Length: 226
Image 1: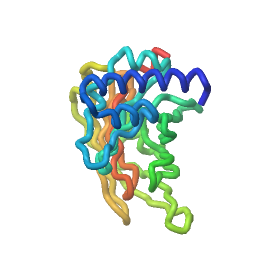
Image 2: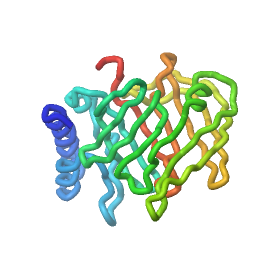
Image 3: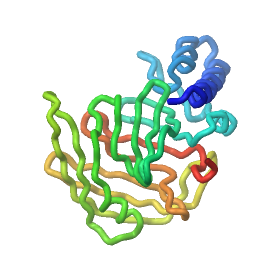
Image 4: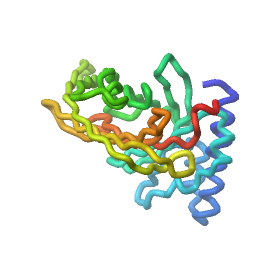
């Protein structure tokens, strides 16, 4: 990550730390933690802070790049990601504490430094189904087992869609909600995608794997502006 981007990310999370300081009184440990790392918020033995509620459009604009707010509900973790690199239709996102995710057309295809990472995923059929192609679709996930051997999980997924309203870009958008129900030999799960008229996934809840559970994300900035 470049020096300029790192400085902008630090400014974003320092601003958020100051907002937390104003709202949390003497909870200096939380402020220092967020100022230094700017990502995960899970103080041991303390209720989780409402980090999303403290982020402002001005903080996001200061990052100078698209920003995502993500949660890992199974772990009670909140993470802010800033776009790192684009490679074709795949985009990698990085947190200040070096967690990373990769999205392909808004669909999660990899995580890093989450523990129990999704090493890679084949989601061509999934993306076609989200765009309106008739299902079912197949998705392939790859993980590492305890001996660092690659393990492949295959799923068959069905889809349903309905009009909805989703929070994104600090506002409410009329969207199409697509529910994806996937079944495989190892486990079954449900993903949700809120898709704007542009075809962009503006909000999502997606399965990472058994060790992590779901990752949810919300777009805080319009990628078309960058």
